[in-house]
Image (cartoon, rainbow, N blue to C red; front, side):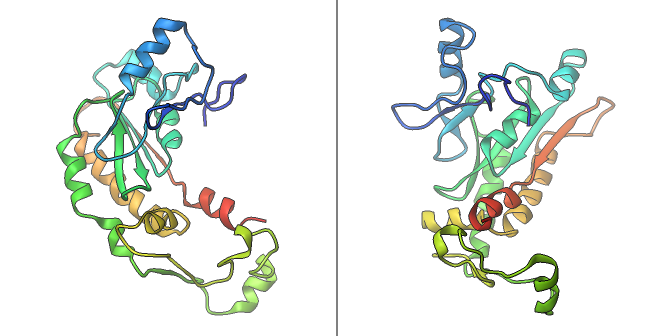
Length: 231
């Protein structure tokens, strides 16, 4: 992902009343900082924290495209806010990410003041709820193949020693936070993201005219699975 070389991921995140920023405080001067706060004050499309590329000091392919072709459209999607925001850049028409508080995809007021109709319609389908009771199983039945190429399933250091052996059942059930949070630790998350990415592509009319458009899709399940089960 694009990074500010001095300060790491340059994403502005604000959650709750106190606020939370990732990136250099006051980057670009006090007025720019105040403007960044104003433009990303709320999550749009559901409950959650707002996020924006306010402190992102680099540029992306999408930014360059928008500079040379303002009519082009650039959209980023991911389960993680920063993975949706940074690849699409500061000039993106929209960036959308998953909120574990309620299993909805959201954006922020950096991009729009109201949730687009297609976003509300996608969230109304409650596709994450369809994975309630879901179990992540091994793909192949021959356990010896896993022992040969991926060693033992149980490794010291994985997720505090709990639920570290296949099969992995998604904990709890909707509308519990635990369910929506645990869903991120399975490949089912990437299935959901693909469905959402296609909806975003249609919602923003990408590829429907002669102008070049960009859709960035950052599949995050492998990352979260690695943090959870990686030793």
